[in-house]
Length: 514
Image (cartoon, rainbow, N blue to C red; front, side, top):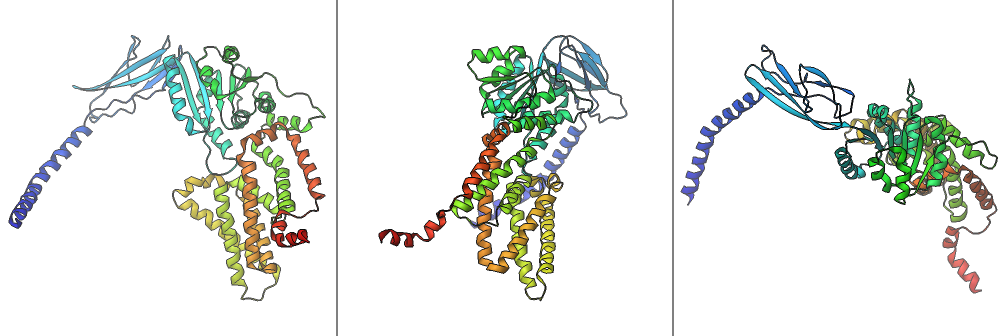
């Protein structure tokens, strides 16, 4: 048995030694012959309007015989032919054409086909969610069959914070700028009002400006149409389109496949799909709603909605913190610190904000422990702590940028320009943390830090993740006065806090029994 195994093993080694080189040489020869073949390559736009010139190029074709001249022959699929490395053609009728390129070098030849859509109508769809990709792809295929070109701009935000959505929308519009100029219909399917305000902000930066007077803008939202309509007037004043129509996602198919955008309102009305139309700009100033007018005015002047929201949300955050402190009894570093810490999370993103926050606290504890061995006055000692905290934040940014994939995940290049303000906030927190640690001990400081983090996270979820509330604040900024009234009511509250009821429950129980 052993002898058979050894003989078969030797036979296998013998076959491998003698057969593998021949196989390898054959593969090399095949690869060389493949590399020596002609390769015709067509470079052109994937879609073009009827009666419009389109250029085709074969410049990227591969000729393994540079000493021999190549001949390029074009068949445009509409009965027209041409020759040359670069050609220009005009398609008179809409449809899907198969453009063929034949490349000849001596007796050798190669062909390539290129499907081209010659459309009657083009549409630019801006969306901020890749979860809609399959639905959009199916709709684009249906539109293509009807000679409609649906071009999608993916304004997908990154993890770099509250301003990431605006940067992503601007980049997506810039990438599809040619379609933006040509189309008469723009569909915005984004979270809240981000797409509409992002489009208005992008248009204001164009030089020369782009004429929107013949364009129809359709904004799809899942929130309140009435609230959205109040915000849309500022964008209308900036863009001056033919009309802005606000509707639901159910209207997407009808919006794309309707032949004339001017007839879209009638189609949606027949389908019983709710919509609102905006055909005028800012209303006159009203003393009953002064903040609403001013918000729309700022939007019309190109001020990003994220900047306006940060200003409007600060009273909301402060009131929520005051409620947690006054009624619930959660101890934080005052009202100012959790408020500005929440704004820092909004500016640089929650994940990176938490990382930087823990870096600040860890650096504060470590440096204070090292400095405890030396006799230094409090203020210079604190200055040293803040200096090393800055070093720690800088080192964390460098490390996250260097370590893949974290640099791309957090988009550090986009973040650095806006990181000074959050860094100063974190440094201020280090000062407060060291002060509490000195006065009450490390355990109390860590407990207060934990409560601070929980309060800031709760504020972040309300302000940064609740899209309906954001739209409501932009549409009805006078709500701030209600929070001001709530602050007055909280200031009059003198009862026991919820945590005090829990802490003294035994005493309260005995008092009730007596």
